[in-house]
Length: 304
Image 1 (cartoon, rainbow, N blue to C red):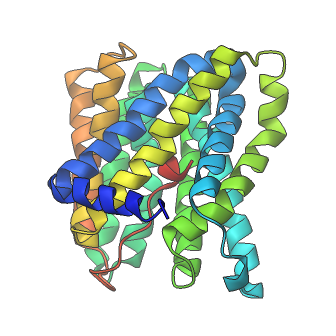
Image 2 (image 1 turned 180 degrees about the vertical axis):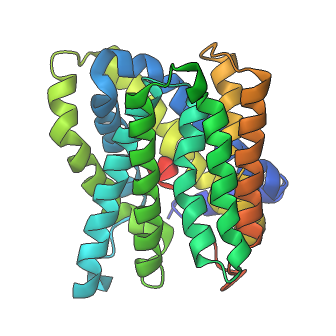
């Protein structure tokens, strides 16, 4: 009897706030969760942090949504498993990246994955120029000419970018069959189990009540809160407008890296971030519009 009241309250809250503000708040929550994960990474490792965060997030989503098992077809099993595994691996890779390189740099590199997918799907040949522009921005960010590129951090971020690209392709395959919430109820536990393979050995011996409380708080920041905010925003925004706005995420990552993690950035690196943001926005607006009313899937950094 009380469950229908939750969507009503969310709807009322969402209608009182501009949709772009909800989308920005979701991005802030994602990047804030990433920035605050750094301390937990130092304690239980990136895979341990991923396992704890994904596990708590999966429990929360399972408590909210019952997985619609009856709607699963045989051909959906492999994509659902792939989505869950991809989410787990992307989360581990990204958290491993921010252990070695600044948050904004990691976000910019990871952003190459969805940007490339958007460009490849575009009906315009010129769209392939946008990943090149973003790559140029990433090169400026990492400043390889100074000889101090952290290969481990860049490598993990590239793995996260590849995983995000795979995630988007698989999401499209099951998008017609399952809503975002339903898909999350399936893939969340799979992602948690995937992360547990490496995460449990990393976290073993370091689990305290403080660590568990911190993990629960991070799970609310990422994925629970941003997922709710994005769903509210997408009810009142077109897919293209939402995707274009999400191109700001690398810049938000840089800002929170400066404010929370006290990471520095040069003027030239700021130009690199601007190039990535411009490329992301241009690729989205130049991309194929199959259905403006259909909301794009949220990224794995939100789902995980």
